[in-house]
Image (cartoon, rainbow, N blue to C red; front, side, top):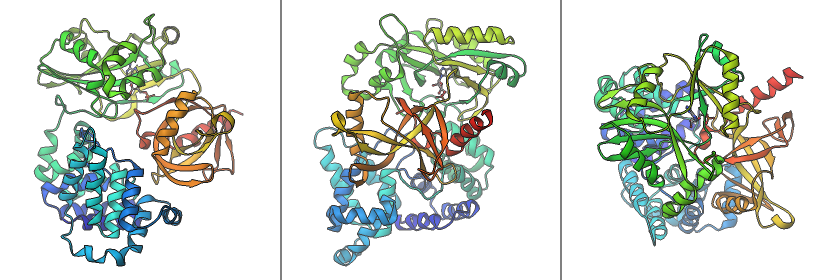
Length: 556
Ligand code: AMP
């Protein structure tokens, strides 16, 4: 299949907002592919070059890409801005510049057209490049690719490289398209996607081996599983009631979720977003090697940073452990971490995800007798639950989790089987989409941030507030550097950036406001921490902001 045909489908997707039409278009497209092309095409339709779980990262910044585009098209920085203004999208802006340069580039179109697999292969080479001189060589490979692109191909190649597909076609629709294309049930597609970690992988399996292939997918060591998540719950009483009169409370630790896979002496640690973070946590690898008594296992827990007194440190301190790959050993001494386990999903050849909570926890205790488990209390009494919550907060933790008695582990689900109870006003996880340079001492730094929620219908980002509060000077400097790599448009002292950075924000209230198209604005917003463990798509939705807004109104 040619890459051009994929670009054409993506273009068609943008011309409809009807979900059923999108599913039909993609399902038809999938059936025209060779089985060996399906995984690749599915990744690209969702705006990524490789499956989520892959260890490859392109590491190509927007500024590098912009330089290449300007070089190929002969356009100037000044021409780029109006192209972006008229389209509001960097992929589309690229197509405008490529079309304008068409006459000059005409002779190039006689070159052999790009195939889907060829594009992925070259991007894989880009991802593999590391170390000195890598940036240059990456740039050359990307330039080689873009040089062979017609405007429409360039548009979607740029979108795939930057991860900004914005066709409105997302994972949920892909599940429907896969079921339709290969005549398999939606239920097994969804189940398989949670175990495989990416719907694109499942599409490939469905194409090759249909329903029976999907049914065979289950937990397997070294293949990360989408983590089970929790719904927000406001009160201890409510948690007990929702769980049928009794529940299992656990301390909710303010750290990083880890899913640890063991196979003989090989250990891999995956983050909540399923990226491989093994290299950053050597002492956890050692602990598991010595103290997890199983040949093969998948366990889950939370890693927290601890101070000299053994008390938990804020999440922010822990982040340093994941940032500096080259200084792992020094960081391990400076920021000691502690692991607490809370679940067991696989043990010596057997999946445990369908076994009840209590059994999983009991077996976890048996194989990890020298590793801490999260504090737990099984109770039907609200007063005991409240005492337990207070103890958790006093010990420096975030709140409680409540896990339903007898419940299975449902990968990827954010349902009522697990509830989270945090005592403070619900913070929001929002995405920075723009920033302004500050004044006085901060005049060189991007220190005032536009915060956006995800519009759950379109996947676009809608501004709901702005803040210059919460970050330290050091953090603002780092944030400035990060944001400068993401700039797509400059307006005086304001920049608009690719929506990449997720931050946790607290605020006093949500007001109705004409300032932003969302119609709402957070009052006295303040950033409480960075959330690099969350992808922009996982940020809070506009619907959730509205819900909090409406709840507030009712209270008045
Ligand atoms: P949130 O990130 O607010 O959606 O809360 C869910 C997260 O809480 C999980 O992804 C875990 O990282 C974390 N967590 C902390 N303690 C526990 C626990 N005892 N059980 C499950 N998750 C926990």
